[in-house]
Amino acid sequence: MKYLRFYTYSLFNGLQLDRWLWVLYLSHRGFTLAEIGIAKVVFEATVLITEIPSGYLADRFGKRPFLIAGGLAAAASALALRNGITLSVVLLAMVLRALAYTLPSGSDAAYLNDAVVSANEEHQLGKILGHFGTTRSFGQFIGGIAGGGLAELSWSGLYAVDFALALGRVAAAVSLPSSVSRRHGSVASVPSNRPAWGHRMMALGGVILLIGLASTYWSVSTVKFLFAQPLLGTRGIGPGVIAMALSCTDLLSMAGSYLGGHLPPGFRRMNHMTWIAACDALVTTLLISPIVHINLLALGASQILIGVSSVVITREILERSPEDLQATFLSGLGTFSSLLSAGGFVLIGTLNSMLGNTPAVLALVSCLAILATIASAIPRKKVIHESLT
Image 1 (cartoon, rainbow, N blue to C red):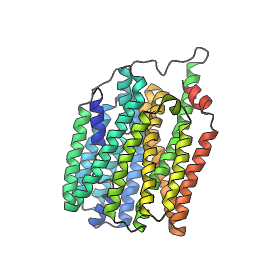
Image 2: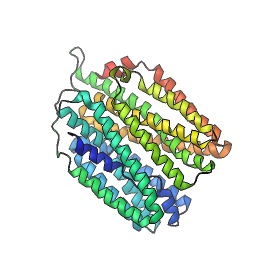
Image 3: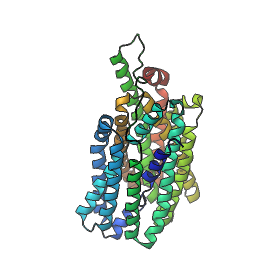
Image 4: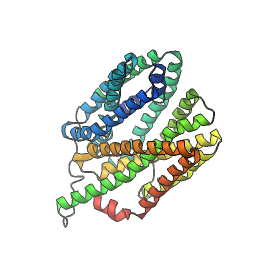
């Protein structure tokens, strides 16, 4: 397979063993919830500070070094967490953990896009991005399952294996082509009756609008899955089973990524943010049910929609962005999603504490319904499509 090295990197990038367990691990090491909360704040602050600058620098100086650096940061974070016995070491691990996320964020998909354009296979971009997302979701699934098993045996062993997997991620990044020669002109093909600068400004505005819609959707989805952990706990499920169940939903995210990469062109040209948010609003209402299996069905359906949206939105941003700002825009999407999700989780958590689970779920549903309504009101063909082509 021509893009096997990219898929291998994506697989290793998804192999994070403590994805659903790091809070439990820190509790096991004796840290209080307040201290763990500080660690989470440090992580989010680092993401907000470094996400967009790392994407911009990757656009300017090359994307592959940032993928390698992200793997090294993941390895250093695993070592720090394995040996960390003080809060300062844990906070350092959180900074490294954030860098492991932000350094390759956006740059990996933009680099893959460079390779696709270089091979004159733009018509296959959606399918290739779908495979790229599917392998990462598979890695997340395997990592979640393996992490749960290792945690039962030894927390120290879990982070030792996590360190080894991070080095595998570094090796996979090193194996990627050192540079990709792109064909220029795909984004600069400006209609003769429109100034180049005017077309670029309209393109930037259209992509920023898309990023605003997408980041709002992904932030609501993030808050929903964070909220799902204590929600499932109130249904009488233990932490190990919750981690196992949420890891299994990653398999459905794989299905969504595959579906997103194989949507027919006519369906893909629809206002996808409208129907994705509307469908997610409907399935999220199932979280009100006291029946665990219905809750898991809702979360699984949401994962499918998230998988579809990640491929479709990433493809559109790559296709519509100026060539020299692709990683920057994708990093911006991650930044705004993190910012909105941090504030959203506080609001949903407060609402849940004051009024209970049902009002919190209805608030999530309302956010998705409002997003779908706003997206449907935007003249997509004129504002997003025509201005960016």
